[in-house]
Amino acid sequence: MNKWLTGNLWRHAVAILVSFFALFPIYLVIISSFNPTGSLQVTSFIPTSGSFTNFSRLFNDPAIPYLTWMKNSLVIAGTVAVLSVVVGAASAFAFSRLKFKGKRSGIKLLLLVQMFPALLALSAVYVIMERVYTFAPSIGLGTQPGLLLVYMGGAMGVNIWLLKGFVDSIPIELDEAARVDGASAVQTYWLIFVPLAAPVLAVVSLLSFIGTFNEFILARLFLVDMDSRTVAVGLQGFIGGQYSQNWGPFAAGSIIASIPIVIIFLSLQKYIINGLTAGSVKG
Image (tube, rainbow, N blue to C red; front, side, top):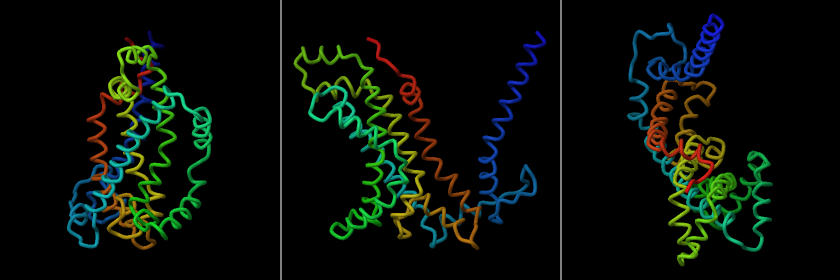
């Protein structure tokens, strides 16, 4: 009995310690956002005073187009999430259920591409999009549509593999029954696959949205103009300069930027749990 109590106490102590270290950075960001000095230095663990100066600066300073940055991030991340689900789901269904020439080679090529880190292609992507700008300025380097194309190309391989694994778990008997009833491949896709795959589609859309919303390297490389930047690139300007480390506005902007992600996560929580735990379809 004593060993059982001691073991439980140790487990609870470790859990509390891990939770403290996991939540402390978030707590530091929150109290820094209300620190009017604009620094990370705090006089006590529990602050005795606070101010909304940092939040007010984000919305009232004409030199800081924070709302434009948020709109750019939401539009780009939302578009990538929707297109990733649409294109990825159709491709996964085709690789899993349809028969066509080059199917096996295409799957192997997708797996091979995913083995290389994305950073290895950064220079090549930059040169390619710079050349694209010479004959198609609207989708070349320095444009949001060009950045959108790069995001889509990088996310397709992972999404197709994830969705294909789910499609493979759907019993083939459902497809055969649909064909007996006279359903075409397109009807099978919309009437059988899409409803059954709703949980995993929600997972793919959420992961694509969060990954794109928080992405910095490609966005910093592509988006140069102040009004075209995403919120990650825009906020980096507060702490990127040698003599302009304003952590207060940076922390305030980070908190506001996290609100859409939290709302979307809570809204899709039921589908996310089902999508991560679904391994087979019972009929």
